[in-house]
Image 1 (tube, rainbow, N blue to C red):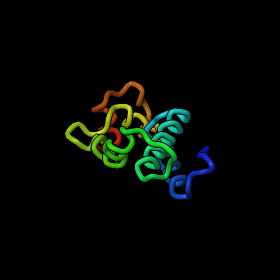
Image 2: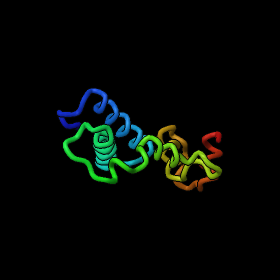
Image 3: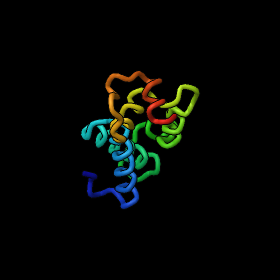
Image 4: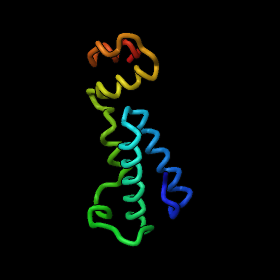
Length: 108
């Protein structure tokens, strides 16, 4: 669960990042850690935390970095992302499919 000192905005951000990571197939603990790290870095970037590392304040923002790494390029989503979506949709035989087959089964 999110720390008490976070604002309502940061709590919403935490839940959004956590839920998005879970939808991409990440397990609960990893998703929560990723969300907490993301929110803490954003808090540091905006002067909301007591201390901040140099990389937290000078690095590319989390939102921009995520956009750059969203697999919207020529190769599209990863096989793991396609598999997670197929699992959510209940596609039969997905464990034996390769990336191309998964994409075809999902109508991509």
